[in-house]
Image (cartoon, rainbow, N blue to C red; front, side, top):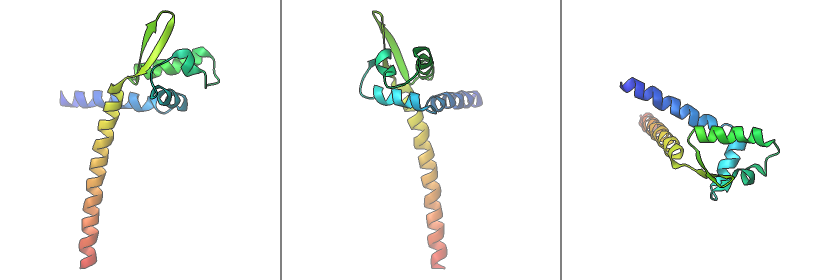
Length: 115
């Protein structure tokens, strides 16, 4: 059971970080950091056809980085905090792990320096 939960967590992390691998998607997230926007607003700075841009929107939505809602004929995108929280938790755990290792290395070097 625990192994299954860990596998699910790893798969979730893979999807979250894969979505960030593309500069277009990072650009969309950067823009959405200023507030919600329509698909057409988000697509403006990118020189690609709307169907291609929509693939990026679907990746971000499927990975949990954004949510979309329909207002009349317009689809509005907004940042979703769940993916940020998951990525942040993983990064914090990695930072704590490596800081502890570096602290031990510093202590070892200090001891050997005094010998």
